[in-house]
Image (tube, rainbow over all chains, first blue to last red; front, side, top):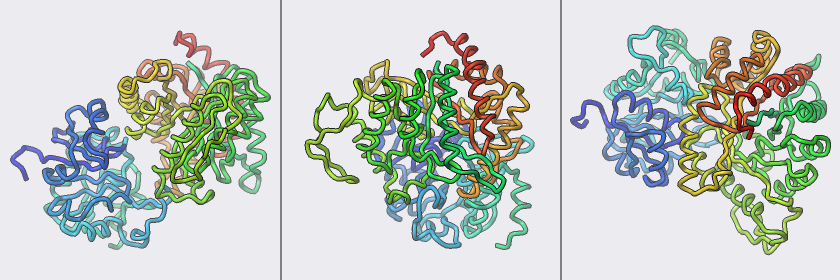
Length: 215
Length: 346
């Protein structure tokens, strides 16, 4: 952790989700940097128009300096990063294995959460699954302050408590009520083809919907 | 401001379930002819390959429409270029363009549906590379001078050695780049010197204003010809005389489509409350009375300055007579109000 008031948020991927997370995080007072596969020069124009205040970074620089990292890439692109790159970091996996749109990816076929596989790949990182089950534009449209009634809930899952604490704080500051559903394996509860996926639900509704589901 | 319609060739409901795909195609041709007759500016046919949406061959329908309409601009919306041969796409659209007297365009996009990948034997993992290469080849063909032969080599099709691509229309085809909102696509359109079409099918319309700004800034940076810098918006929409009737009817059919799509793609069906929120003011769903829809188009134009807006009306087995009536109202009721409010007709 740096000495800043809020953590430095690093977002890998500057597509629709990455830029939406960045915009909300900037509003919440975070320092934000983004990286993509094509280098910071390619981000100069889009960041100046879409995300004034966000910084374009080299991937390695972003990985080294960020306190919290969001993976907002197409899932298959995880292979372009070495496990060492994110070693020691708290990493939010906002991606989904969504075969109808991305095609079949062999290592994700099966009954486990896609985040469990990524955690074994990024074995020295502390992975938290969240931000994967909300439409990117709803990150802005549905955000509400902490004291609002009917605030939307967002589920998260992970095996490291302190990592989840950091991520819960981010989720709350982005405008949503974080709902910890337990270890990373419970991430299957909010993947595609579940009632939580892409649905507006309060924290209480998320708890009710997942309470009866055996872990 | 140009107004129009786009369709994927919606099938009708039969007593046993889905009606014949053949009828969807003849209905589609009838709809295009009506759109022309009521003075609409644009009709787009979106390439799809499903039992619900069987418009798999837009250029064929557009060629038939080209011969039986007089004013309307005809286009794909979109051509799934990634899984087609750009040489063939060009030839088909060039032919239809000539038949129409220059009214046929192409809207090229990556497409949100992926049925065409297994159908034509392509790998979804090549999604981005396929699109980039094929779009570049299409543009290169379109920029050839009269009878200028083409030499080209790439990854996904056989090389071309000094080959003529015919026929050529008297002036190049207008080719638009379609995007669902990825920032990179707005920059790509400008880098390629293309007008851009944003498909906005959910959420707030205003969230696209920064992307339009990005496109305009990129257009300056890439020194696009100002007359080529054009913005189109595609969104779901349905018009009936009575606002409540319009909203209830479209909910039934749009809601059914989203629920069906949700089962395939793994997301929950939207609620009526969600639909109601999105079918007013800044929402992406343009279901309502002619006055309401005209007001919303005018308001959107004031914020993003688009020059073309077209609506997908026939989804979820919307009865054909309702589809035709909605087209008619767009042409005879909505369009005059919009044109009166927005002086620059283009």
